[in-house]
Image (cartoon, rainbow, N blue to C red; front, top):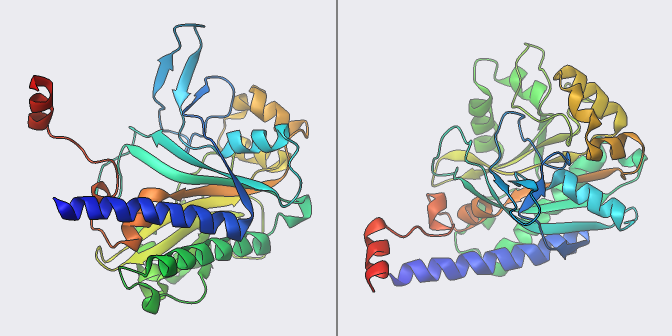
Length: 327
């Protein structure tokens, strides 16, 4: 029993430390996050494009809302509304429901908790160099947090000084016989902390490393790398699971050109009529970079827990609920 409470204290402390470290490294201001967004606003994030959001009606005004999946588009609109300048950014501690997960496992649950951050950049900063710089800053925040925790899992000695970067096309060519997830496992076991660049577009063999919606990350812009895209995933090696653990999905956000191109590629041009998309197409939203960093997975990795349930809200058994009801 006492070990449970000790773990919960460690979870809370680690989250506090990382929030501070992330704000320091990226110069972010913490803001409060919405739990739901109005249907039809265009601000809901559709992740890979197929997930169904939890919907409900507001009795007082008849509006229908959806529980958020993430806050990528909401954050960008907020930065525009409050006239944030280049270099300014925000972070929100988001809680969401994703009941459409294909399977629940030691790293997947219906409850999602993440640091959702966004920063204004200049249009000329929409480059691989900018993406890599922010990834390294996030990694420094991870190392800062482990150091402040006293590294209870003793991870620090085994971690590299820098993130290893590879684009998804080069990764496919290195391990052509493996699936995308197997490739992630192989490269992360070797380098411990890896960022895979360019996720969402077609690879040279006609496959995708993973799916992405067309209207937040830019996964189609050509770059100097083998594959296209200005986004990616941050992976770390979890020794206890003997597997790669995805901590963050992030990227430079679509501009008007990339939005039109990606909607055409996914044959979903109809979404361009929604209010958020119209704001972007008319030049009312700033260029930004941002992403989500999974709170439960990050703490699970730092504390070397074997299952996400150890660091998320604990479930109360049916028997315990009955006892409470009787009392």
